[in-house]
Amino acid sequence: MCGIIAYIGKQKAVPILLEGLRQLEYRGYDSAGISVIQKEKIITLKAVGKVVELQNKIGERDFSGKIGIAHTRWATHGKPSDKNSHPHGDCEGNIFLVHNGIIENYQELKNILIKKKHKFLSETDSEVLAHLIEDFNKTLNFKKSVLEALKLVRGTYGLAIINKNEPDKIIIARNGSPLILGIGKDEFIVASDASAVVRHTDKVIYLGDNELAEITADDFEISNIKNKIISKKISKLNWTVEESKKGGFSHFMLKEIFQQPEVIGNGLRGRVERFLLEESVPMLGGLRMVEKRLRKIKKIVIVACGTSYYSGLVGEYMLEEYAGIPTEVEYASEFRYRKPILDSSTAVVAISQSGETADTLAAIREAKNKGALTLGIVNVVGSTIARETDAGTHTLSGPEIGVASTKAFTTQLVVLALWTLMLGRQRSMSNVMSKRIAQELKKIPKLIEGILKKSKEIQKIAKKYSSAKDFLYLGRKYNFPIALEGALKIKEISYVHAEGYATGEMKHGPIALIDENFPSIFICPKDSVYEKNISGMQEIKARGGKIIAIATVGDKEIARIADDVIYIPKTLEMLTPFVSVIPLQLFAYYFGVAKGYDVDKPRNLAKSVTVE
Ligand code: G6P
Image 1: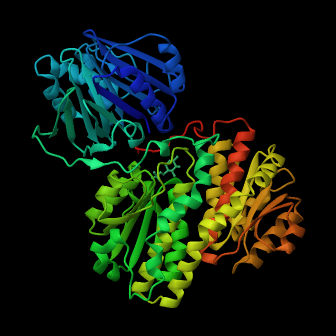
Image 2: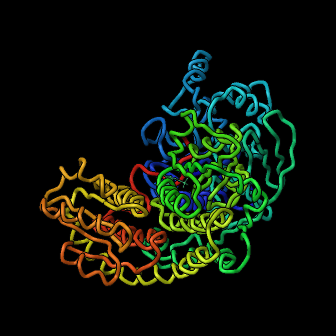
Image 3: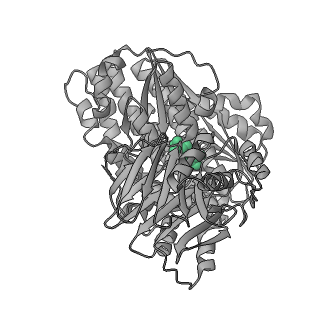
Protein backbone atom coordinates (compact mmCIF):
# COMPACT_ATOMS: atom_id res chain seq x y z
CA MET A 1 0.00 0.00 0.00
CA CYS A 2 1.81 3.08 -1.31
CA GLY A 3 5.41 2.67 -2.31
CA ILE A 4 8.20 4.81 -0.90
CA ILE A 5 11.68 5.13 -2.27
CA ALA A 6 14.47 7.54 -1.33
CA TYR A 7 18.05 7.87 -2.54
CA ILE A 8 21.17 9.59 -1.25
CA GLY A 9 24.61 8.95 -2.71
CA LYS A 10 26.94 9.82 -5.55
CA GLN A 11 24.65 9.07 -8.49
CA LYS A 12 21.85 11.14 -10.02
CA ALA A 13 18.80 10.43 -7.91
CA VAL A 14 15.96 10.76 -10.45
CA PRO A 15 16.63 7.67 -12.65
CA ILE A 16 17.14 5.54 -9.53
CA LEU A 17 13.94 6.84 -7.95
CA LEU A 18 11.94 6.23 -11.13
CA GLU A 19 13.26 2.69 -11.44
CA GLY A 20 12.38 2.12 -7.77
CA LEU A 21 8.86 3.45 -8.34
CA ARG A 22 8.38 1.02 -11.22
CA GLN A 23 9.36 -1.82 -8.89
CA LEU A 24 7.02 -0.57 -6.19
CA GLU A 25 4.11 0.24 -8.44
CA TYR A 26 2.25 -2.93 -7.45
CA ARG A 27 1.84 -1.43 -3.98
CA GLY A 28 -0.37 1.39 -5.26
CA TYR A 29 -0.68 3.08 -8.60
CA ASP A 30 -3.16 5.90 -8.75
CA SER A 31 -0.56 8.67 -8.79
CA ALA A 32 3.16 9.17 -8.32
CA GLY A 33 5.56 11.95 -7.42
CA ILE A 34 9.18 12.81 -6.86
CA SER A 35 11.20 15.52 -5.04
CA VAL A 36 14.89 16.08 -5.60
CA ILE A 37 17.34 18.47 -3.93
CA GLN A 38 19.20 20.32 -6.63
CA LYS A 39 21.40 23.41 -6.31
CA GLU A 40 19.91 24.29 -2.92
CA LYS A 41 16.39 24.04 -4.31
CA ILE A 42 13.81 21.29 -4.04
CA ILE A 43 12.15 20.36 -7.33
CA THR A 44 8.89 18.42 -7.08
CA LEU A 45 6.99 16.75 -9.91
CA LYS A 46 3.76 14.76 -9.67
CA ALA A 47 1.42 12.96 -12.04
CA VAL A 48 -1.92 11.21 -11.74
CA GLY A 49 -1.98 7.61 -12.99
CA LYS A 50 0.80 5.09 -13.31
CA VAL A 51 4.51 5.80 -12.93
CA VAL A 52 4.89 6.10 -16.70
CA GLU A 53 2.86 9.33 -16.53
CA LEU A 54 5.39 10.81 -14.11
CA GLN A 55 8.20 9.61 -16.33
CA ASN A 56 6.57 11.33 -19.33
CA LYS A 57 6.28 14.53 -17.34
CA ILE A 58 9.98 14.39 -16.48
CA GLY A 59 10.70 13.66 -20.16
CA GLU A 60 14.20 14.60 -21.29
CA ARG A 61 14.86 16.93 -18.36
CA ASP A 62 18.15 16.07 -16.76
CA PHE A 63 18.24 16.47 -12.99
CA SER A 64 21.66 16.49 -11.40
CA GLY A 65 20.45 16.22 -7.77
CA LYS A 66 21.80 13.27 -5.80
CA ILE A 67 19.27 13.30 -2.99
CA GLY A 68 15.59 12.60 -3.52
CA ILE A 69 12.38 10.98 -2.36
CA ALA A 70 9.51 9.46 -4.35
CA HIS A 71 6.14 7.85 -3.85
CA THR A 72 3.51 5.82 -5.68
CA ARG A 73 0.10 6.25 -4.09
CA TRP A 74 -2.91 4.17 -3.15
CA ALA A 75 -5.42 6.82 -2.12
CA THR A 76 -6.79 6.82 1.41
CA HIS A 77 -7.62 10.51 2.04
CA GLY A 78 -8.59 12.49 -1.04
CA LYS A 79 -9.01 11.29 -4.61
CA PRO A 80 -6.06 10.71 -6.94
CA SER A 81 -4.96 14.17 -8.16
CA ASP A 82 -1.74 16.15 -8.51
CA LYS A 83 -2.39 18.05 -5.32
CA ASN A 84 -3.12 14.93 -3.30
CA SER A 85 -0.06 13.08 -4.65
CA HIS A 86 3.09 12.89 -2.61
CA PRO A 87 5.64 14.38 -1.91
CA HIS A 88 3.83 16.93 0.25
CA GLY A 89 5.45 20.18 1.25
CA ASP A 90 5.27 22.86 3.93
CA CYS A 91 4.23 26.50 3.39
CA GLU A 92 7.66 27.73 2.29
CA GLY A 93 8.61 24.81 0.06
CA ASN A 94 11.50 23.91 2.36
CA ILE A 95 10.34 20.55 3.65
CA PHE A 96 9.01 17.71 1.50
CA LEU A 97 7.98 14.25 2.55
CA VAL A 98 6.50 10.98 1.34
CA HIS A 99 4.26 9.04 3.68
CA ASN A 100 2.76 5.57 3.82
CA GLY A 101 0.15 4.92 6.52
CA ILE A 102 -2.64 6.95 8.08
CA ILE A 103 -2.43 9.88 10.48
CA GLU A 104 -5.57 9.32 12.51
CA ASN A 105 -5.60 12.68 14.31
CA TYR A 106 -4.73 14.68 11.19
CA GLN A 107 -7.89 16.81 11.28
CA GLU A 108 -7.22 17.89 14.85
CA LEU A 109 -3.59 18.76 14.01
CA LYS A 110 -4.65 20.48 10.79
CA ASN A 111 -7.08 22.74 12.69
CA ILE A 112 -4.32 23.80 15.08
CA LEU A 113 -1.93 24.48 12.19
CA ILE A 114 -4.55 26.45 10.23
CA LYS A 115 -4.97 28.68 13.28
CA LYS A 116 -1.22 29.22 13.12
CA LYS A 117 -1.70 30.41 9.49
CA HIS A 118 -0.39 27.31 7.74
CA LYS A 119 -1.72 26.98 4.19
CA PHE A 120 -2.78 23.52 3.07
CA LEU A 121 -2.95 22.47 -0.57
CA SER A 122 -4.26 18.92 -0.36
CA GLU A 123 -7.01 16.88 1.30
CA THR A 124 -4.52 14.33 2.59
CA ASP A 125 -3.61 13.39 6.13
CA SER A 126 0.06 13.29 5.10
CA GLU A 127 0.45 17.00 4.36
CA VAL A 128 -0.16 17.76 8.04
CA LEU A 129 3.19 16.18 8.86
CA ALA A 130 5.13 18.53 6.59
CA HIS A 131 3.54 21.58 8.26
CA LEU A 132 4.02 20.17 11.72
CA ILE A 133 7.72 19.63 11.08
CA GLU A 134 7.93 23.14 9.59
CA ASP A 135 6.46 24.56 12.78
CA PHE A 136 9.10 22.93 14.97
CA ASN A 137 11.86 23.69 12.47
CA LYS A 138 11.47 27.41 13.25
CA THR A 139 13.36 26.79 16.48
CA LEU A 140 14.74 23.25 16.37
CA ASN A 141 17.04 21.44 13.96
CA PHE A 142 15.62 19.07 11.32
CA LYS A 143 15.92 15.83 13.30
CA LYS A 144 14.52 17.28 16.51
CA SER A 145 11.65 18.85 14.58
CA VAL A 146 10.73 15.46 13.12
CA LEU A 147 10.92 13.83 16.55
CA GLU A 148 8.73 16.50 18.14
CA ALA A 149 6.21 16.30 15.30
CA LEU A 150 5.97 12.51 15.57
CA LYS A 151 5.26 12.77 19.29
CA LEU A 152 2.00 14.55 18.41
CA VAL A 153 0.93 12.09 15.79
CA ARG A 154 -1.50 9.22 16.29
CA GLY A 155 -1.51 6.60 13.55
CA THR A 156 0.87 4.76 11.29
CA TYR A 157 3.70 6.01 9.15
CA GLY A 158 6.61 5.11 6.99
CA LEU A 159 8.23 8.44 6.14
CA ALA A 160 11.09 9.86 4.10
CA ILE A 161 11.70 13.60 4.49
CA ILE A 162 14.04 16.16 2.95
CA ASN A 163 14.66 19.73 4.08
CA LYS A 164 16.22 22.61 2.13
CA ASN A 165 17.61 24.03 5.39
CA GLU A 166 19.71 20.87 5.91
CA PRO A 167 20.15 19.76 2.30
CA ASP A 168 22.74 17.03 2.88
CA LYS A 169 20.43 14.46 4.45
CA ILE A 170 17.26 12.42 4.39
CA ILE A 171 15.36 11.56 7.54
CA ILE A 172 13.23 8.45 7.61
CA ALA A 173 10.91 7.20 10.35
CA ARG A 174 8.62 4.29 10.89
CA ASN A 175 5.62 3.31 12.97
CA GLY A 176 3.51 0.49 11.61
CA SER A 177 4.41 0.87 7.92
CA PRO A 178 7.46 -0.98 6.64
CA LEU A 179 10.72 0.80 5.77
CA ILE A 180 13.98 -0.77 4.73
CA LEU A 181 17.32 1.02 4.68
CA GLY A 182 19.53 -0.46 1.95
CA ILE A 183 23.25 0.02 2.52
CA GLY A 184 25.07 0.26 -0.81
CA LYS A 185 28.59 1.26 -1.73
CA ASP A 186 28.74 5.05 -1.24
CA GLU A 187 24.96 5.26 -1.31
CA PHE A 188 21.81 4.49 0.65
CA ILE A 189 18.46 3.43 -0.75
CA VAL A 190 15.37 3.53 1.42
CA ALA A 191 12.23 1.71 0.35
CA SER A 192 8.98 0.40 1.68
CA ASP A 193 9.71 -2.93 0.03
CA ALA A 194 12.75 -5.08 -0.68
CA SER A 195 11.97 -5.28 -4.41
CA ALA A 196 13.17 -1.68 -4.91
CA VAL A 197 16.38 -2.18 -2.93
CA VAL A 198 17.59 -5.52 -4.26
CA ARG A 199 19.10 -4.17 -7.49
CA HIS A 200 21.39 -1.86 -5.48
CA THR A 201 22.40 -3.92 -2.48
CA ASP A 202 21.54 -6.99 -0.45
CA LYS A 203 22.59 -5.40 2.85
CA VAL A 204 19.61 -3.95 4.69
CA ILE A 205 18.39 -2.72 8.02
CA TYR A 206 14.71 -3.22 8.83
CA LEU A 207 13.62 -0.12 10.68
CA GLY A 208 11.48 -0.95 13.73
CA ASP A 209 8.43 0.88 15.04
CA ASN A 210 9.17 4.26 16.63
CA GLU A 211 12.60 4.36 15.03
CA LEU A 212 14.11 7.11 12.95
CA ALA A 213 17.26 7.30 10.81
CA GLU A 214 19.25 10.33 9.76
CA ILE A 215 21.08 9.50 6.54
CA THR A 216 23.84 11.46 4.79
CA ALA A 217 25.74 10.41 1.66
CA ASP A 218 28.32 8.52 3.68
CA ASP A 219 26.79 7.63 7.01
CA PHE A 220 23.61 6.97 8.93
CA GLU A 221 22.47 7.04 12.52
CA ILE A 222 19.41 5.33 13.93
CA SER A 223 17.62 6.52 17.04
CA ASN A 224 14.35 5.85 18.76
CA ILE A 225 11.57 8.36 19.19
CA LYS A 226 13.17 9.50 22.48
CA ASN A 227 16.30 10.44 20.52
CA LYS A 228 18.38 7.64 22.01
CA ILE A 229 20.90 6.29 19.46
CA ILE A 230 20.44 2.56 18.83
CA SER A 231 22.49 0.04 16.92
CA LYS A 232 20.72 -2.33 14.55
CA LYS A 233 21.64 -5.59 12.91
CA ILE A 234 22.44 -5.54 9.19
CA SER A 235 20.49 -8.32 7.47
CA LYS A 236 20.98 -9.95 4.08
CA LEU A 237 18.16 -9.87 1.54
CA ASN A 238 17.29 -13.29 0.23
CA TRP A 239 15.74 -12.10 -3.06
CA THR A 240 17.51 -11.72 -6.36
CA VAL A 241 17.09 -9.12 -9.12
CA GLU A 242 16.02 -11.88 -11.54
CA GLU A 243 13.10 -12.76 -9.31
CA SER A 244 11.68 -9.27 -9.68
CA LYS A 245 11.44 -9.47 -13.51
CA LYS A 246 8.70 -10.97 -15.69
CA GLY A 247 11.06 -13.53 -17.24
CA GLY A 248 9.38 -13.73 -20.67
CA PHE A 249 5.80 -13.94 -19.38
CA SER A 250 3.27 -11.31 -20.44
CA HIS A 251 2.31 -10.61 -16.82
CA PHE A 252 3.74 -11.23 -13.36
CA MET A 253 0.54 -13.05 -12.50
CA LEU A 254 1.07 -15.60 -15.28
CA LYS A 255 4.74 -16.00 -14.35
CA GLU A 256 3.74 -16.59 -10.74
CA ILE A 257 1.08 -19.15 -11.69
CA PHE A 258 3.68 -21.03 -13.73
CA GLN A 259 6.27 -20.79 -10.94
CA GLN A 260 4.12 -22.86 -8.61
CA PRO A 261 5.70 -26.28 -9.26
CA GLU A 262 9.11 -24.75 -8.53
CA VAL A 263 8.21 -22.76 -5.41
CA ILE A 264 6.09 -25.55 -3.96
CA GLY A 265 9.13 -27.77 -4.50
CA ASN A 266 11.25 -25.21 -2.62
CA GLY A 267 8.75 -25.13 0.24
CA LEU A 268 8.80 -28.91 0.53
CA ARG A 269 12.52 -29.54 0.03
CA GLY A 270 14.39 -30.41 3.19
CA ARG A 271 11.12 -30.30 5.11
CA VAL A 272 8.81 -33.00 3.81
CA GLU A 273 11.52 -35.67 3.79
CA ARG A 274 11.59 -35.81 7.57
CA PHE A 275 8.02 -37.13 7.54
CA LEU A 276 9.11 -40.03 5.35
CA LEU A 277 11.57 -41.29 7.95
CA GLU A 278 10.91 -43.43 11.00
CA GLU A 279 11.62 -40.49 13.31
CA SER A 280 9.41 -40.08 16.35
CA VAL A 281 8.17 -36.52 15.82
CA PRO A 282 9.85 -34.54 13.06
CA MET A 283 10.09 -30.83 13.85
CA LEU A 284 10.24 -27.98 11.38
CA GLY A 285 13.23 -25.71 12.00
CA GLY A 286 11.38 -22.46 12.71
CA LEU A 287 9.16 -24.13 15.33
CA ARG A 288 11.82 -26.00 17.27
CA MET A 289 12.02 -23.46 20.08
CA VAL A 290 8.29 -23.75 20.77
CA GLU A 291 8.12 -27.55 20.42
CA LYS A 292 7.05 -28.15 24.04
CA ARG A 293 4.38 -25.46 23.92
CA LEU A 294 3.02 -26.88 20.67
CA ARG A 295 2.41 -30.23 22.35
CA LYS A 296 0.10 -28.55 24.86
CA ILE A 297 -1.88 -26.49 22.36
CA LYS A 298 -5.62 -27.18 22.66
CA LYS A 299 -6.90 -24.72 20.09
CA ILE A 300 -5.64 -22.97 16.98
CA VAL A 301 -6.97 -19.63 15.77
CA ILE A 302 -5.83 -18.59 12.31
CA VAL A 303 -5.97 -14.86 11.53
CA ALA A 304 -5.50 -13.53 8.01
CA CYS A 305 -6.97 -11.39 5.22
CA GLY A 306 -7.89 -11.92 1.56
CA THR A 307 -6.36 -14.92 -0.14
CA SER A 308 -4.35 -15.77 2.96
CA TYR A 309 -7.62 -16.10 4.86
CA TYR A 310 -8.79 -18.70 2.35
CA SER A 311 -5.62 -20.74 2.73
CA GLY A 312 -6.35 -20.60 6.47
CA LEU A 313 -9.79 -22.12 5.78
CA VAL A 314 -8.16 -25.04 3.96
CA GLY A 315 -5.80 -25.33 6.94
CA GLU A 316 -8.78 -25.60 9.27
CA TYR A 317 -9.99 -28.73 7.45
CA MET A 318 -6.49 -30.22 7.45
CA LEU A 319 -5.68 -29.50 11.10
CA GLU A 320 -8.98 -30.70 12.46
CA GLU A 321 -9.13 -33.87 10.39
CA TYR A 322 -5.52 -35.00 10.70
CA ALA A 323 -3.99 -33.24 13.70
CA GLY A 324 -7.17 -33.38 15.78
CA ILE A 325 -6.83 -29.80 17.02
CA PRO A 326 -9.94 -27.58 17.14
CA THR A 327 -9.23 -24.77 14.69
CA GLU A 328 -10.98 -21.51 13.89
CA VAL A 329 -10.22 -19.08 11.11
CA GLU A 330 -10.94 -15.39 11.60
CA TYR A 331 -10.73 -12.33 9.40
CA ALA A 332 -7.96 -10.43 11.15
CA SER A 333 -9.96 -7.22 10.79
CA GLU A 334 -12.79 -8.72 12.85
CA PHE A 335 -10.67 -10.59 15.36
CA ARG A 336 -9.02 -7.41 16.62
CA TYR A 337 -12.34 -5.82 17.56
CA ARG A 338 -13.90 -8.86 19.18
CA LYS A 339 -13.12 -10.10 22.62
CA PRO A 340 -11.41 -13.33 21.60
CA ILE A 341 -11.12 -15.90 24.36
CA LEU A 342 -7.48 -16.89 24.37
CA ASP A 343 -4.98 -18.30 26.81
CA SER A 344 -1.59 -19.94 26.79
CA SER A 345 -3.03 -23.17 25.38
CA THR A 346 -4.15 -21.36 22.21
CA ALA A 347 -1.88 -20.84 19.23
CA VAL A 348 -2.80 -17.83 17.12
CA VAL A 349 -1.41 -18.24 13.62
CA ALA A 350 -0.99 -15.26 11.30
CA ILE A 351 -0.94 -16.16 7.61
CA SER A 352 0.40 -13.35 5.44
CA GLN A 353 2.28 -13.14 2.18
CA SER A 354 3.68 -9.68 2.86
CA GLY A 355 4.00 -10.00 6.62
CA GLU A 356 2.88 -6.35 6.79
CA THR A 357 -0.92 -6.45 6.57
CA ALA A 358 -2.06 -4.00 9.24
CA ASP A 359 -5.09 -5.98 10.43
CA THR A 360 -3.17 -9.25 10.68
CA LEU A 361 -0.37 -7.56 12.58
CA ALA A 362 -2.84 -5.98 15.01
CA ALA A 363 -4.51 -9.36 15.56
CA ILE A 364 -1.19 -10.97 16.42
CA ARG A 365 -0.33 -8.18 18.85
CA GLU A 366 -3.71 -8.60 20.53
CA ALA A 367 -3.13 -12.37 20.81
CA LYS A 368 0.30 -11.80 22.32
CA ASN A 369 -1.13 -9.44 24.93
CA LYS A 370 -3.59 -12.14 25.91
CA GLY A 371 -0.82 -14.69 26.44
CA ALA A 372 -1.42 -16.87 23.39
CA LEU A 373 1.43 -18.48 21.50
CA THR A 374 1.81 -16.53 18.25
CA LEU A 375 3.01 -18.22 15.08
CA GLY A 376 3.57 -16.94 11.54
CA ILE A 377 3.19 -18.42 8.08
CA VAL A 378 4.80 -15.58 6.19
CA ASN A 379 6.53 -15.19 2.85
CA VAL A 380 8.61 -12.04 3.30
CA VAL A 381 11.63 -12.74 5.48
CA GLY A 382 12.33 -9.88 7.87
CA SER A 383 8.77 -8.53 7.63
CA THR A 384 7.05 -7.24 10.76
CA ILE A 385 4.80 -10.27 11.31
CA ALA A 386 7.75 -12.63 10.76
CA ARG A 387 9.69 -10.70 13.39
CA GLU A 388 6.92 -10.24 15.93
CA THR A 389 5.55 -13.79 16.10
CA ASP A 390 7.08 -16.23 18.60
CA ALA A 391 7.97 -18.75 15.89
CA GLY A 392 6.91 -19.79 12.40
CA THR A 393 7.68 -21.14 8.97
CA HIS A 394 8.46 -19.11 5.85
CA THR A 395 6.57 -20.03 2.71
CA LEU A 396 9.57 -19.45 0.40
CA SER A 397 7.55 -18.43 -2.64
CA GLY A 398 9.93 -15.59 -3.59
CA PRO A 399 8.62 -12.11 -4.39
CA GLU A 400 4.99 -12.05 -5.50
CA ILE A 401 4.39 -8.95 -7.64
CA GLY A 402 0.99 -9.63 -9.23
CA VAL A 403 -1.60 -8.04 -6.98
CA ALA A 404 -3.84 -11.11 -7.20
CA SER A 405 -2.13 -13.72 -5.07
CA THR A 406 -1.38 -17.13 -6.61
CA LYS A 407 1.91 -18.78 -5.66
CA ALA A 408 1.76 -17.25 -2.19
CA PHE A 409 -1.52 -19.13 -1.67
CA THR A 410 -0.27 -22.58 -2.69
CA THR A 411 2.96 -22.21 -0.69
CA GLN A 412 0.87 -21.27 2.35
CA LEU A 413 -0.98 -24.55 1.78
CA VAL A 414 2.39 -26.35 1.76
CA VAL A 415 3.23 -25.01 5.21
CA LEU A 416 -0.25 -25.78 6.53
CA ALA A 417 0.06 -29.37 5.29
CA LEU A 418 3.50 -29.72 6.90
CA TRP A 419 2.22 -28.26 10.17
CA THR A 420 -0.68 -30.73 10.03
CA LEU A 421 1.80 -33.59 9.74
CA MET A 422 3.96 -32.28 12.56
CA LEU A 423 1.15 -31.43 14.97
CA GLY A 424 -0.60 -34.66 14.01
CA ARG A 425 2.52 -36.70 14.80
CA GLN A 426 2.77 -34.91 18.17
CA ARG A 427 -0.71 -36.26 18.81
CA SER A 428 -2.36 -39.37 17.40
CA MET A 429 -1.35 -39.47 13.73
CA SER A 430 0.40 -42.74 12.85
CA ASN A 431 3.75 -42.82 11.17
CA VAL A 432 2.13 -44.71 8.28
CA MET A 433 -0.40 -41.93 7.74
CA SER A 434 2.19 -39.14 7.90
CA LYS A 435 4.38 -41.01 5.39
CA ARG A 436 1.44 -41.47 3.05
CA ILE A 437 0.54 -37.76 3.10
CA ALA A 438 4.20 -36.75 2.77
CA GLN A 439 4.64 -39.01 -0.25
CA GLU A 440 1.62 -37.49 -1.96
CA LEU A 441 2.75 -33.98 -1.07
CA LYS A 442 6.06 -34.62 -2.82
CA LYS A 443 4.15 -35.38 -6.03
CA ILE A 444 2.24 -32.08 -6.05
CA PRO A 445 4.75 -30.05 -8.14
CA LYS A 446 4.62 -32.65 -10.95
CA LEU A 447 0.82 -32.76 -10.82
CA ILE A 448 0.64 -28.97 -11.15
CA GLU A 449 3.04 -29.07 -14.10
CA GLY A 450 0.54 -31.35 -15.84
CA ILE A 451 -2.33 -28.87 -15.30
CA LEU A 452 -0.24 -25.94 -16.52
CA LYS A 453 0.31 -27.79 -19.80
CA LYS A 454 -3.43 -27.46 -20.37
CA SER A 455 -3.45 -23.68 -20.05
CA LYS A 456 -4.51 -23.16 -23.69
CA GLU A 457 -7.58 -25.30 -23.11
CA ILE A 458 -8.47 -23.23 -20.03
CA GLN A 459 -7.90 -20.04 -22.03
CA LYS A 460 -10.46 -21.26 -24.63
CA ILE A 461 -13.05 -21.94 -21.93
CA ALA A 462 -12.42 -18.50 -20.39
CA LYS A 463 -13.00 -16.90 -23.81
CA LYS A 464 -16.19 -18.91 -24.30
CA TYR A 465 -17.66 -17.41 -21.12
CA SER A 466 -16.23 -13.92 -21.62
CA SER A 467 -19.68 -12.29 -21.88
CA ALA A 468 -20.77 -13.60 -18.45
CA LYS A 469 -21.38 -10.88 -15.88
CA ASP A 470 -21.73 -13.19 -12.88
CA PHE A 471 -20.30 -16.49 -11.71
CA LEU A 472 -21.19 -18.82 -8.87
CA TYR A 473 -18.24 -20.86 -7.57
CA LEU A 474 -19.19 -23.97 -5.63
CA GLY A 475 -17.28 -26.58 -3.68
CA ARG A 476 -17.52 -28.69 -0.54
CA LYS A 477 -15.19 -29.58 2.31
CA TYR A 478 -11.56 -28.94 1.28
CA ASN A 479 -12.75 -27.28 -1.88
CA PHE A 480 -15.22 -24.88 -0.31
CA PRO A 481 -12.37 -22.43 0.43
CA ILE A 482 -11.18 -22.97 -3.15
CA ALA A 483 -14.61 -21.85 -4.39
CA LEU A 484 -14.15 -18.68 -2.33
CA GLU A 485 -10.62 -18.15 -3.66
CA GLY A 486 -11.69 -18.80 -7.27
CA ALA A 487 -14.46 -16.20 -6.94
CA LEU A 488 -12.07 -13.70 -5.35
CA LYS A 489 -9.55 -14.13 -8.18
CA ILE A 490 -12.05 -13.33 -10.91
CA LYS A 491 -13.49 -10.39 -8.95
CA GLU A 492 -10.05 -8.93 -8.39
CA ILE A 493 -8.78 -8.96 -11.94
CA SER A 494 -11.87 -9.10 -14.17
CA TYR A 495 -14.30 -6.92 -12.23
CA VAL A 496 -17.17 -9.36 -12.74
CA HIS A 497 -19.48 -10.29 -9.93
CA ALA A 498 -18.68 -13.72 -8.50
CA GLU A 499 -19.73 -15.52 -5.36
CA GLY A 500 -18.11 -18.46 -3.69
CA TYR A 501 -20.45 -20.79 -1.84
CA ALA A 502 -20.45 -24.16 -0.14
CA THR A 503 -22.34 -26.41 -2.55
CA GLY A 504 -24.74 -27.52 0.18
CA GLU A 505 -25.66 -23.91 0.97
CA MET A 506 -26.44 -23.02 -2.64
CA LYS A 507 -30.05 -24.19 -2.39
CA HIS A 508 -30.61 -21.77 0.51
CA GLY A 509 -30.47 -18.66 -1.61
CA PRO A 510 -28.01 -18.34 -4.48
CA ILE A 511 -29.87 -20.82 -6.67
CA ALA A 512 -32.50 -18.10 -7.10
CA LEU A 513 -29.96 -16.19 -9.21
CA ILE A 514 -29.40 -18.99 -11.68
CA ASP A 515 -30.48 -18.73 -15.30
CA GLU A 516 -28.79 -19.43 -18.63
CA ASN A 517 -26.66 -16.28 -18.30
CA PHE A 518 -25.32 -17.03 -14.81
CA PRO A 519 -22.77 -19.84 -15.05
CA SER A 520 -21.57 -21.94 -12.11
CA ILE A 521 -18.11 -23.35 -11.61
CA PHE A 522 -18.20 -26.58 -9.63
CA ILE A 523 -15.06 -27.89 -7.96
CA CYS A 524 -15.95 -31.50 -7.93
CA PRO A 525 -13.03 -33.93 -7.59
CA LYS A 526 -13.66 -37.62 -6.81
CA ASP A 527 -13.56 -37.25 -3.05
CA SER A 528 -15.78 -38.08 -0.08
CA VAL A 529 -18.32 -35.40 -1.07
CA TYR A 530 -18.38 -36.14 -4.79
CA GLU A 531 -21.96 -37.46 -4.84
CA LYS A 532 -23.21 -34.44 -2.92
CA ASN A 533 -21.58 -32.12 -5.42
CA ILE A 534 -23.15 -34.01 -8.30
CA SER A 535 -26.61 -33.53 -6.73
CA GLY A 536 -25.91 -29.79 -6.53
CA MET A 537 -24.88 -29.79 -10.16
CA GLN A 538 -28.13 -31.49 -11.19
CA GLU A 539 -30.09 -28.84 -9.31
CA ILE A 540 -28.35 -26.07 -11.25
CA LYS A 541 -28.79 -27.90 -14.54
CA ALA A 542 -32.50 -28.38 -13.89
CA ARG A 543 -32.78 -24.58 -13.75
CA GLY A 544 -31.02 -24.01 -17.05
CA GLY A 545 -27.69 -22.89 -15.55
CA LYS A 546 -24.45 -23.45 -17.44
CA ILE A 547 -21.79 -25.49 -15.62
CA ILE A 548 -18.01 -25.59 -15.78
CA ALA A 549 -16.70 -28.51 -13.72
CA ILE A 550 -13.26 -29.00 -12.25
CA ALA A 551 -13.15 -32.79 -12.07
CA THR A 552 -10.77 -35.68 -11.52
CA VAL A 553 -9.18 -37.10 -14.62
CA GLY A 554 -11.12 -40.11 -15.91
CA ASP A 555 -14.49 -38.92 -14.58
CA LYS A 556 -16.68 -39.46 -17.65
CA GLU A 557 -19.94 -39.18 -15.74
CA ILE A 558 -19.41 -35.48 -15.06
CA ALA A 559 -18.94 -34.67 -18.74
CA ARG A 560 -22.56 -35.71 -19.28
CA ILE A 561 -23.82 -33.09 -16.82
CA ALA A 562 -21.42 -30.17 -17.16
CA ASP A 563 -21.11 -27.94 -20.23
CA ASP A 564 -17.32 -27.80 -19.91
CA VAL A 565 -14.91 -29.87 -17.85
CA ILE A 566 -11.36 -29.06 -16.78
CA TYR A 567 -9.65 -32.21 -15.54
CA ILE A 568 -7.23 -32.24 -12.62
CA PRO A 569 -5.07 -35.17 -11.48
CA LYS A 570 -5.95 -37.47 -8.61
CA THR A 571 -4.39 -36.92 -5.21
CA LEU A 572 -5.39 -37.34 -1.56
CA GLU A 573 -8.58 -35.51 -0.67
CA MET A 574 -6.69 -33.26 1.76
CA LEU A 575 -4.36 -32.17 -1.02
CA THR A 576 -6.95 -31.53 -3.78
CA PRO A 577 -6.91 -27.74 -3.18
CA PHE A 578 -3.34 -27.66 -4.56
CA VAL A 579 -4.55 -28.93 -7.91
CA SER A 580 -8.09 -27.54 -8.03
CA VAL A 581 -7.02 -23.92 -7.50
CA ILE A 582 -4.66 -23.87 -10.51
CA PRO A 583 -7.36 -23.97 -13.24
CA LEU A 584 -9.27 -21.26 -11.35
CA GLN A 585 -6.21 -19.00 -11.26
CA LEU A 586 -5.69 -19.53 -15.00
CA PHE A 587 -9.39 -19.06 -15.75
CA ALA A 588 -9.43 -15.71 -13.92
CA TYR A 589 -6.17 -14.65 -15.59
CA TYR A 590 -7.33 -15.39 -19.14
CA PHE A 591 -10.76 -13.93 -18.45
CA GLY A 592 -9.19 -10.64 -17.29
CA VAL A 593 -6.73 -10.56 -20.20
CA ALA A 594 -9.54 -11.22 -22.71
CA LYS A 595 -11.29 -8.14 -21.33
CA GLY A 596 -8.14 -6.10 -21.88
CA TYR A 597 -7.45 -5.33 -18.22
CA ASP A 598 -4.07 -4.84 -16.58
CA VAL A 599 -4.29 -7.99 -14.49
CA ASP A 600 -1.09 -7.23 -12.57
CA LYS A 601 -2.49 -3.96 -11.30
CA PRO A 602 -6.23 -4.28 -10.90
CA ARG A 603 -8.15 -1.09 -10.29
CA ASN A 604 -8.63 0.08 -6.70
CA LEU A 605 -6.45 -2.68 -5.20
CA ALA A 606 -2.98 -2.78 -3.68
CA LYS A 607 -0.67 -5.66 -2.98
CA SER A 608 0.06 -4.99 0.61
CA VAL A 609 -2.56 -3.34 2.79
CA THR A 610 -0.68 -1.57 5.54
CA VAL A 611 -3.59 0.57 6.67
CA GLU A 612 -6.60 -0.53 8.65
C1 G6P B 1 -4.39 -7.60 -0.26
C2 G6P B 1 -3.92 -8.33 -1.50
C3 G6P B 1 -4.38 -9.80 -1.43
C4 G6P B 1 -3.90 -10.44 -0.16
C5 G6P B 1 -4.34 -9.67 1.08
C6 G6P B 1 -3.64 -10.17 2.34
O1 G6P B 1 -5.77 -7.47 -0.29
O2 G6P B 1 -4.41 -7.71 -2.67
O3 G6P B 1 -3.84 -10.50 -2.55
O4 G6P B 1 -4.39 -11.75 -0.09
O5 G6P B 1 -3.98 -8.29 0.94
O6 G6P B 1 -2.27 -9.91 2.23
P1 G6P B 1 -1.13 -10.69 3.01
O7 G6P B 1 0.15 -10.03 2.54
O8 G6P B 1 -1.37 -10.48 4.47
O9 G6P B 1 -1.21 -12.12 2.62
